[in-house]
Image (cartoon, rainbow, N blue to C red; front, side, top):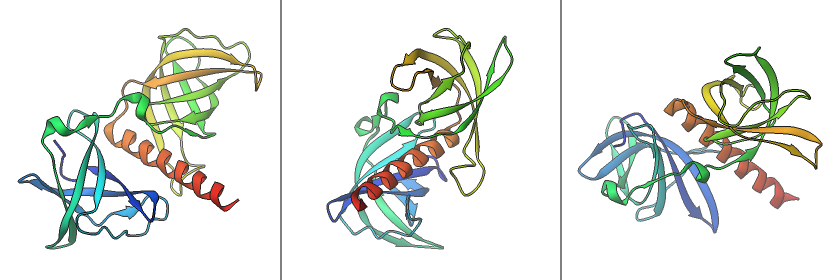
Length: 218
């Protein structure tokens, strides 16, 4: 179910703090998953995972659906590269991640929206997740729930390297926000690639963890 080379996210507790790291699947056989040494999503530093440590593993399956399961570290394996060995439960023990479970984070990003029957336009997002995005509409712009668009989301302002996410999306809600006085629209991705969705998941987790760390420092 986990493909070789697939990105995996590890969630674990260290010193009473929730931490997340990313890695790649190297081998899956005999109910064991071998992954490359993971790195912290926020700092980019290699993390040390001790034997018998409990971790939560998230990945995007061959069906391009995200899954989660609980595992433990079985030990280290050294071949051509050093790897970590984790237990893999039966498929029925893996939980499918629902869209509402995606981490959502505030983010002001440049978004190009391409409707089917009207001229494309640029706008800004105000939050995003691996399942959808919320954007601001200009005065006079009007769309219907269920309408489909093509989106190009530019992450260059937030990442060290430019990354554009291209996906089809459907309008879920349009409303007037009394606090900001602006008209807003929420969209759900309907044809996003597994790699782009995994990238957005990591992006949102990283922003949330950075936000928590900054809050603790204040």
